[in-house]
Amino acid sequence: MDAYGVEVERTLEPLKLKMDFDKDGKLMPVWYSLVLLD
Image 1: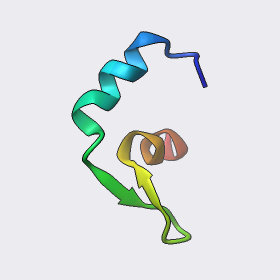
Image 2: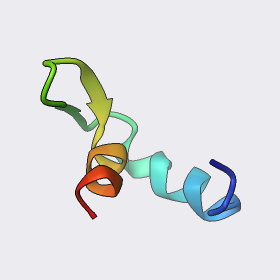
Image 3: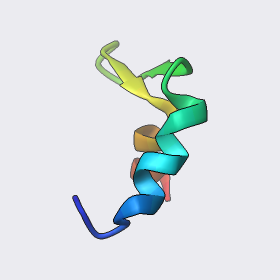
């Protein structure tokens, strides 16, 4: 998903250490879980 362009890279910079679990118990980046919930 390149729709966000450079903003994604800048967003992942501070969040890359923050991880969350999805419904299946798999580790996923917080931003990705937020996208799924959005």
